[in-house]
Image (cartoon, rainbow, N blue to C red; front, top):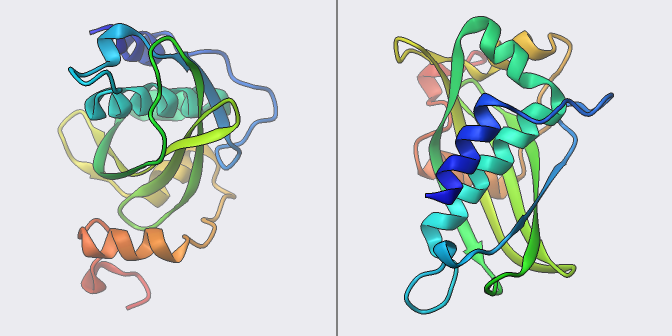
Length: 181
């Protein structure tokens, strides 16, 4: 419940824009493991990681000033797919960081990497394919969302592991949807 309140706060009252920060630059969110994040085995519950990532993605948008563009068009972000790799457990009350960075986008989704570290050690890595919807539930093409933020931006080439993952999960553009097809 605490993470849901934190996410609500991050979305409704986003932190201030970091001057000069672009959407392609990393954003760092600092957190602490609380007892409600743990499962019966004393590990951070996998669902808690996803909620923490939601907060960190909201902070990525806030740091870059992207909330304004989304609000102007009445668009909101949703997760189309996500994957996680866990390396080291986070312990109760430990402080940790989530570094979120936009990897790129295609016709359908934006792709964000989110890395959990504690005391300099890798704890987990998540990749999220995100979409934006309007208030009627219609998908907004990712290039339109990025252009509303900064029309001059072009997507970096997606890392091959992320591009392959997106194709396997059917979140990447299908051949009939590609502009160059």
